[in-house]
Image (cartoon, rainbow, N blue to C red; front, side, top):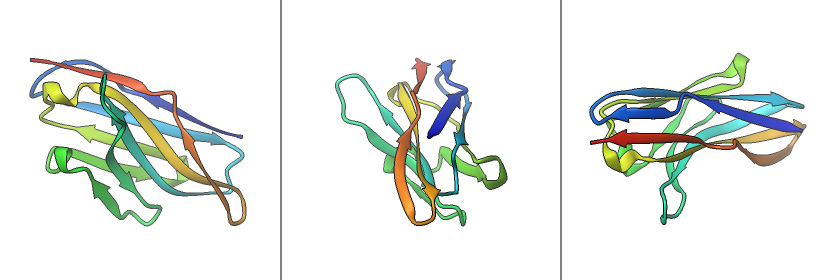
Length: 120
C-alpha cells in the first residue's frame, strides 16, 4: 500500500513561518496531484493548496500570498511553506496524494495529520 508521513508542524507565534513536509512511500507507480488540506476544530476540512506532477498549483483563498506549495517528484515529497502565519491558520494539516499503485489505477491517500498552532 501507500503511506504518507507528514512532519514540520508545531507551535509558532503569529507572523512567523513553518514548513511542512509529506513523504509518500510504498507501492507507488505514479503520483498525480499532491496537496494539503486543513481542519480546524468545529469546521469542515478545507483545501490549502495542491500541486500536480507538472507543477501546476491551486491555492485556497485564505492562504494566497502567504503559503507556497512545492514538490520534489523523485523523492515523492510535497512541501508547504507557510509565512505570515495567523491564529486562524491553527488546524490539523493533512497531506493528500492521488497515487497509482499500477498503471491507470489511481486512489486517494491521506496522511495522519500534523497539528499547527499559531498563538497571537
